[in-house]
Structure formats: C-alpha cells, structure tokens
Length: 123
Image 1 (tube, one colour):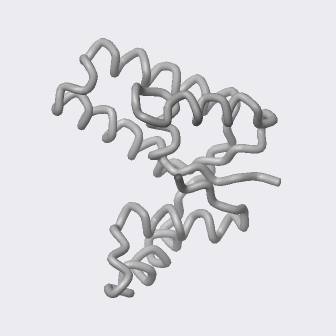
Image 2: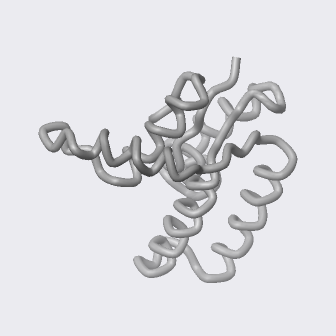
C-alpha cells in the first residue's frame, strides 16, 4: 500500500520541530517505495524552508543542507507523482467549497492524492 505524504510531515521530519523525532522514526520504519509525494510537495517544501529562513528558524546554510537531504530522499526513497492540469481543476472544485476553509495548496494535495487512490497521511 502506498501512502501520500503532505509537505508538513516532511518539514517536521527534516527540520527541528516538536514532532521531528516521531516523524523520523515513523518514516524510517516504512518500506522504500511505499511513500508517495507529488511535484507540488517539491515546490511547497522549498517554500516552507524559505519561510523558515525568513522567520529565522533556519539559517540559509541549514536550508541548503535540508533541501539536499530532501531531494536525495525524493530521488531514492519516494515515489513522485506528476501534477496535471486536471489536478489543478479538481483542486479548484475542492476550493470552491468555501465553507470548508480549504486553502489552495491543500486542495491541490487532495486532488493529487485522490487521483493516485492512495491513503493520505496528513499530520
């Protein structure tokens, strides 16, 4: 069974956050090839690290190190799903449901995960 990972789980696993140890332990116990991300996670992860630099939670040097580890992980251990035009349209339909308060990026995660038919792991 493949599991779709949200960006926040990966940021927690690879930077110093409250649940870092828990996320690292969980990820270490998963078989290679079982964990799935999307090209959107690749973009969002970079943005999250940049925000951490701007808010002085990471140095620029630490950001470069974490990004290098993440890219190697994506290349060697994670399955990366492409994002299609249809995914953006489906995400818009999710975001159209304004009463949910769903943000655009999260709507895109949901659309990609739905297409992949794998369970989501959103912390």
